[in-house]
Image (cartoon, rainbow, N blue to C red):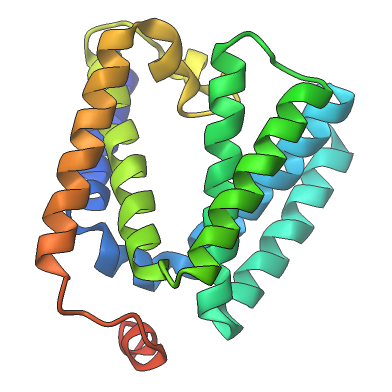
Length: 214
């Protein structure tokens, strides 16, 4: 019980920071987020294609770690492409979450949908130079997800053990009810609006990116 409350409070704090102040945090944490994004993408891809559970096989863990390290290095050296790749990972994550909610847990169909969503979102980000807005959008979505999960934990709708076996942080939100889904979307939109207003004069350029590491 105490572990669940502490986890919920931590998720709520992290979610609030990500949702409403995520741009600055994201600029610092981009290589870290890229690593975890690559880890999820590689491990989840192996899980969807071959089964065995998320991060439950050495193959999935190895591929996830290698892909995570490569994306982290790439995002540091080529930060604009790094954000585009991370946008592709988020697109794949959202596509998989929707397919999972529809009942497609593994197989060719969720893999193809996740791949298409990732390619579309990553390509649009790169071609249209939406890196700054992608950073704000990703952080707002992730923060809103953490805030809703914290609330679900506090009211007993999900458990820490259930989150560990879900394979996707968005799955408990989508699976519980449409009310939580609408709340998640509302918080994400509010966080995006706050960040756009706060950082509309900030330019997504190399000097701005490396300034946060100085």
